[in-house]
Image 1 (cartoon, rainbow, N blue to C red):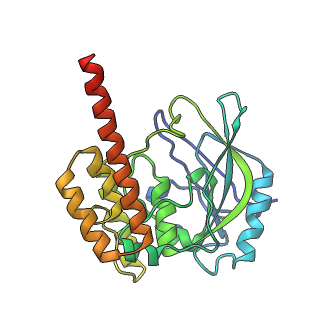
Image 2 (cartoon, rainbow, N blue to C red):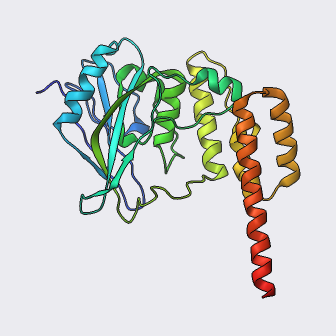
Length: 275
């Protein structure tokens, strides 16, 4: 089946980066050195090295692109993954992936809240068409880890995301990528790089550069972690008054609960010390 996408992958210790190839008649190139060339191929698949997949993946994903316009619009299609051990055994039926209504575009959300979550998942489960690839690449050379967020968040802003509610692959957990379920807090440098990339892509696609992580509720967990209470209080008060909706109120509640938990932990530690 020569019209199915050819999938290449490579990684180095401690990372999970992918090489990509368009379908028939296009040349394989790493994503940061590309943009996509024009040609016959329409679909672009991204898989990282811990992935387990089969021909069923292509046979399910390929029709989804044609159902939603093939290469006429910038489209991303993604699916669920089964979490596998190093020996390829299922881990307690864990499923890796996120659900959302389709099609999904988060530009309106980002414009209101100044940030967005990765609502798609890892590159392991993502396929994008050439129209979207032309909008997303190249990715910043500074994106050395978690490059999936650049593709997923970028696609959520300048394209359309469609979810296939099927388990079409597996994600193998091993020593260098055993982060599933762990605290995945990111550094300031990473969020700055991601913000610059997303705003640049918005401008390139004739949209306003609306992302400002430090001016959004996205910054609250870091402020709690750093114990910057005065700035957090001012931040929460300002955004609550500005946005004045249930979404922001819910994050105020969760943030206050996390502060309370820190306080209880400090009290227990002091009591244990006295004993």
